[in-house]
Image (tube, rainbow, N blue to C red; front, side, top):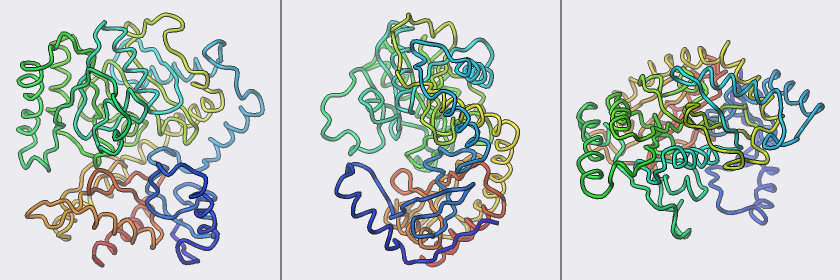
Length: 437
């Protein structure tokens, strides 16, 4: 079994030297929570430059779905790189690009024909969805949600509403974007169905009645599980209600599955847990086990834009596509089932935590997308961001990598190859941290 192994103080001497050099030349806009300088990775384990080994429950922010450096993914990358690295799929054809588009169209939720646009990152997938929705509907306005994170380029940033620091100082963003409450039962203090009704009524009774003609709305974009806000799982009535609102007013429903897709929740897509089918789906992160790639998947009748309307020089790079094809095969035949099985085992253990630890308000999630909300006490539900950060620091010192999400939640998003033994080790470390605090 892979176990954490700390051999130096943290950060070690080599890590400190690299961090000092980094501070002199790298953008300070990055948000490094703790001083890990990664050197190598295998499966669910990262080794730093000083030889310390960590269980990785971040997966590079939910990216390395098949684990670090899976041999089949590495072989696919090496083989493709030796044959063809780039020719630009915007002007020429790759057989592998067609094959990947066929696979994504086949696993996309719902029936009917699909078409696929390739980019390099999650924010590019969202930008493509924005443009496609406008192009296909002839409308220009959008509804997004408080707490949403859709990216940091100007269009996707306009839809984002998770932290004001992401928008501060960047001036006027995309016009015609309206934000509505996301159904967040724990924070609302209401029953899930009532929470969902309140959120849906805000769109119909406040936005549509007072400020936003529904006939001018091109799309409603929603994360089926909100990522950066704390892995918030909405009531099933909320997402189904959004589908009904969209259908009623001729609006496109866009599911941002950049973080929740590609098997992370124990199914291909998080929206499958809610039995909804979006018109447009955005995909990135786990699609290619760490290589830069994204996809915007839409109904074929929607993706009818003309040549030159939208393109990307590097989108659908042959090496990234090779990694994606290997990733999809591993997910389909091994790892989605593993994510469901190991995630269920973890949740069975975590569900007891609010009864044991006064600072755990709620544990939620599907598969290996699990959020733990940290509070000062369960009676007040007051957010405890400093305590959340301290838990993350203590876990790091014990050889476990976790990240925060939202104001006060921990997110657990290990590689989908994680074993039950590794998962139990990680859970034990977190329990030790909670007990010490």
